[in-house]
Length: 184
Image (cartoon, rainbow, N blue to C red; front, side, top):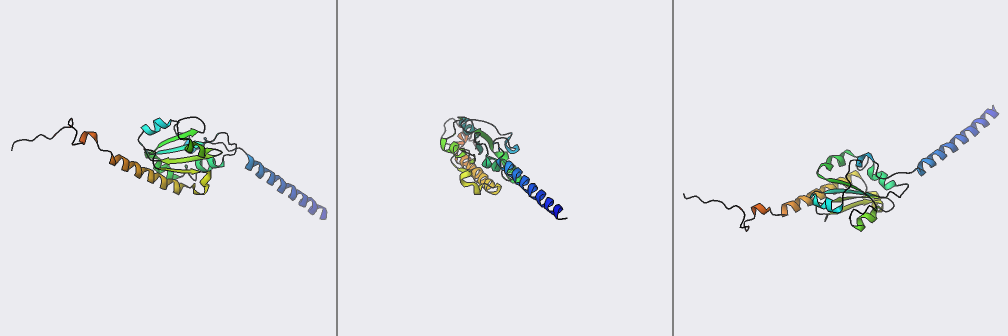
């Protein structure tokens, strides 16, 4: 009976060691950026094309050189971009993804935030209201915070559209149609 216990004790120790080794191997496994289901349909456009769209923008920039891109995994995962509340708000946005270093004309300070990870930028249509989520502020990368940023971008974009006068309705325009006065 003592031999059996010793053998079971050894077996148990060996099983625990094997379990720890497989957990360590899983932790060291590569995490590839830019392949998450939540961003597969996102377009790859230039900064100029994005500006011309006149829509609020979700811009996802990721570092393909980073072998264990935990930030990309977080952003692309079910708890952020895959979350139903974020997906529900995406409809009014231009959805863009960009590999770091592609040279699509986005400002360097935006692109550099993806160095060694990834960044999600939530932008108003004129790109003046910007909120970023990256490894530098990893504790803020939540679906709730992204939704709040998206709502701010939509609001800012709406205010910009409302502030632009319609050229067809400008009273100072001599070419605009003037009301016809009828004798009466």
